[in-house]
Length: 343
Ligand code: 13P
Image 1 (cartoon, helix red, strand yellow):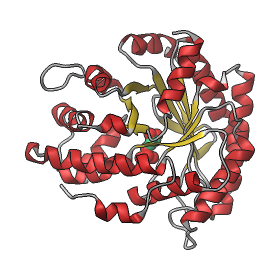
Image 2 (cartoon, helix red, strand yellow):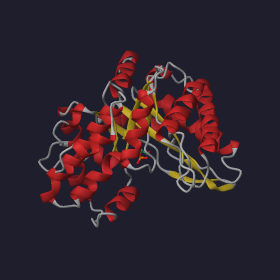
Image 3 (spheres, rainbow, N blue to C red):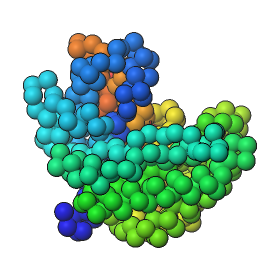
Image 4 (cartoon, helix red, strand yellow):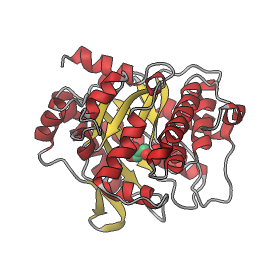
């Protein structure tokens, strides 16, 4: 892939009206999601579930790319078509999660570091051969008593930067994901402060590592109060504070910011993104989504693991994708939640 192709891929992933589906749940995470609907975590069920999402008619109108897990990028649909081909037929770009999950940060058991740099160059070469054109690496930052530590921020920024540089070397667009968790009772102001510090460390380290900003995407949290906080900010406040933080911290050369949903409800994640795009100031980057739970929760509940519910699951997924597509230009309204025809 030429450098220009990397830029074009990054831009295509944040094309107007579209965003990314994160369907890269590890076996442990998909187990949790399946447990919620009483479905056994077998290879066949994982395939059927993802096939339902990927074959949703019209999904390509709102979904530019899908992040896959190692098993899924090698998997075939029931009729033997590789999933990467199923996605290509929808005009959707396949991506791959390449980190190997988190472990405790040495010396600070309540903080995490992400593993997976060893052998990454070789794995990227293989994934590119399998059709991946972009990748994801997630770093986790926890807010708590005297954390995050600067050791945690530096360690995670370093891994993200080496990962991103390796991706660009191998012709893959890196999604750089520093996630400041919503867990805890912290205020929105504290989230603002920690997100600022995190992004500052990440972009300084990306610079040192020679990562080309035009050839990457940033996948951050929104600036939001902790889940257990008694004071929850309004949609407008989340939108204003998030954009203020990113204007100060994210260089304009980055083509897009694709938010994670992080435990927000589906309507909340859509409303917050829409409010950001409806702000009167124009932004230097595209503001889009790369949601996991906020795109899938309703589809999972409609499916319940039963073949007879596939079209209901697809309808739920399509509706949610459509509402997030509208949020890309600030046109989502709560009314849309009721107007969409239930399956
Ligand atoms: P959520 O939107 O469920 O937070 O998942 C996005 C993701 O890919 C986290 O790494």
